[in-house]
Each structure stands twice: as structure tokens, then as C-alpha cells.
Length: 223
Image 1: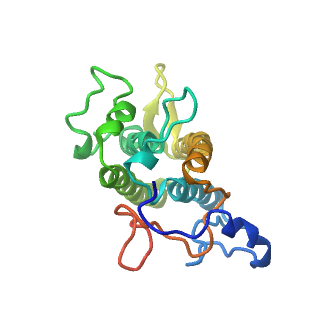
Image 2: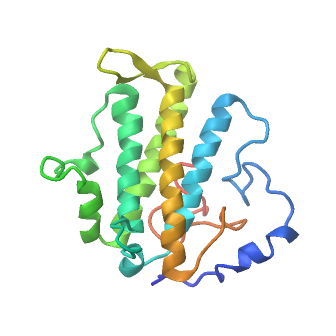
């Protein structure tokens, strides 16, 4: 069910204790959040660590692997890739500043199916699913970086209650950490069911082997 040869899933966990502590932001462990960063650095770092872990759990699979289910649950890694891609664009376009969703979501089926991004993923090939997520995360990183430079965590965003009380960027980032926390846990179980891959973080030096998440330098695009 994998589309590329990888190290045995248990090998990274077995010799993790022999490795030195990860260095935040290094080429070997770019997912490691800063040890004593600012509030914004800590929040973005926590979100990016979950993104990297989710991508690691979803990486390198064919259609059968991305379609693996557990028990009566309808969740799959393929469905989660597309769902989280939509969640990224909704959070950091519509909720952030009221922008429309990117054109990739034009012609969607939400009018007929509120879970369209989940159910439609079953008909998408792996390259499409990885592409949705990789591209959405790259867009989000650029837009969050620009927003933080413009007004910091306290700035109001477009998202508001029915009474007109606006959220701030801090709340938007916290919500995405929660979203990824939930679904990365799902991805842990789903990937273990596919081929036994386990572990909290990717092994040092890991990079995606599928989709558009790999640049020529081997770093995920938009990172």
C-alpha cells in the first residue's frame, strides 16, 4: 500500500534514545518548535509541528493505503488530507480577512453534501490529495506570516459571532492547533492500520516522498 520504499516504521522509535535532542528549526528537525520563543513563534511552531506529523503519517501511500478505514469509521487518510486542506484555506482566507476560498475549490459540492470534501476524496487520486494539502499549507504559511508582520496576534480577523464580536488572530491559530490535534490523532491510528508506521514525530531528516510537498532542496514548499 506504500508507493515508495521507507525505513521500517519501528526503526526510528527504536533508536530515538540514541539521538541528540532535536534542534528547533534545523534542517534535520524543522518541525521542532522553539524552546523559548515568543507567543506567536510558539503558536505557529505548535501548529507546524502537527502539520509535519500529519504529513508524515499520510505520506507515501497509494489509493488503497489512503482509503484504509478502521471499524465503522468512515475516516481515511485521503479524506483527512482533503478536509484539512479545506480547513486551512477556510481559516486563513475566509476567517482571516473575508477572502473567497482559492479557485481550486470552485465547483465544489457543498450545496448538496455538507461533507463534500470528505466524501469526494474517495474519487481523487493520491497525487491530487497530496497536492490539495501541500498547496493549502503553503498558502496558509504565507498568509499567516504576512498577517503577523502586519498586526500581530491581537489583531481582529474577519471571523465574528452573530453579535458582531470579532475573533483575533490568536484565536484563529489556536483553533487550527485544535483541529490538527484531533485529526493527527486519527491519522496515527489510520497509518498504523495500513503498514504499522508509528511515532510522535518524523525521524530526523525526513521529507515527504509523495505529492508536491517536496521542493528541489528537499524542504516542503512554503515552509
